[in-house]
Image 1 (cartoon, rainbow, N blue to C red):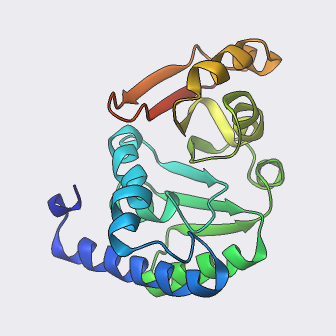
Image 2 (spheres, helix red, strand yellow):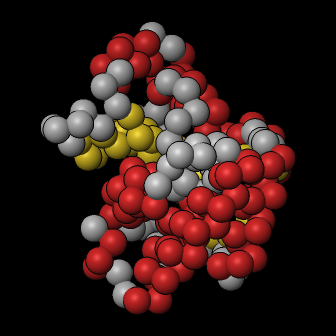
Length: 202
């Protein structure tokens, strides 16, 4: 999948992968037993899959960024994005994120130490796109990212086999009233993995 990127991008992905594997021996960012192959096929892949769905993003936030997944991947690949904010509450991961931003020369990336609600107070609803890999179920994620999104902005979240149950719970939550009907913009039949989009009502 990453073969379609030019040599410069592949080199920077390799640098990021090396740093992740090295730091994970101490910081447990992705698990100490994770291999390079697993890193690309499992962890980096989410960023690759999101890429076409952030094609129009200019201001993007990655909530619960952790080790920078998928935010750093998108920072490397989504050239049209003007600014990416990596939002993370854990100090060790903040150290790693700041290190990678410097090492990879990601001038358009800001690292925010705190939770999404705190970032919402800091930045307001300036983000047209917010992404996350795993910050709770659909209703929880929708509540967390709402203060970050501009009107008409879209929250893209990666979901698995539990999505139908999450969707049922979501519709019972008052947060559903702030968004358009959830859309599955990508679904993989083999794995049950999908990308779900919530668009904030204008």
